[in-house]
Image: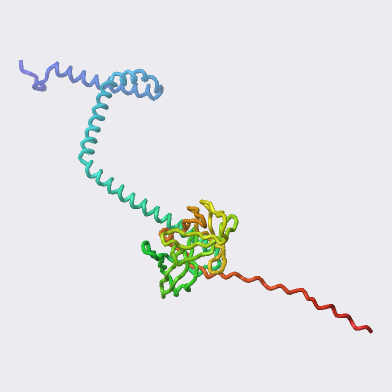
Length: 300
């Protein structure tokens, strides 16, 4: 008998069954998936138990994976930090040095502003101010105590004008140039300033010792009333120095006076005020009472 002409070579019943079951499994899987999707949409909590079971089952593997990932990240960070430690350390040291410099500059500016504010307030209170000047230098050795200002005749300064800082009297103008002036400091041996004790007005003279201190000489000899810590101010006697200007503090009491420390150290006084010489105004004379007898009106 002849073989049928429509028979396909290589085909068998086993292959046909495999194909059929494959298509059937695919269709059933699609139907089951659709059913599960519909159930999850209608009731989202229906598979919470299954999800929890799946999470519990995969938790150990997830923990191992997380630890491995963390260990790998730490290892990379350690290696990277080790390789960059030198450059980072140098950069931090450079930034620290720059920060220290800026801090010192800020402190200097703050102190400068504080001194200028005190000087400005003093200038506003004192109507006799001629000008404000910078003290550019002062003698630190030798028998004379003279300082130099960066202002002279161009600012209206004249010899004899008192010079003071925010903390107290500094001295007086000795000689003047076009743009500079010399100040005879109160600590110079040639300086003599009439002073009084601030709390009760005990009169005295303050003479420079040439070593940065003042020798206080009492006018009224007898029992020395001065005590350590007493504040001394100018008395205004004889003119020139405005009264009640702070000048010194008693540091050591002697038999006929005391040794005092100046309040305004020239080495610390960057800016000073030059004032007009103070002159005490004499009291106006009062009219003397008339001793002539009263004149009588003529009789009519």
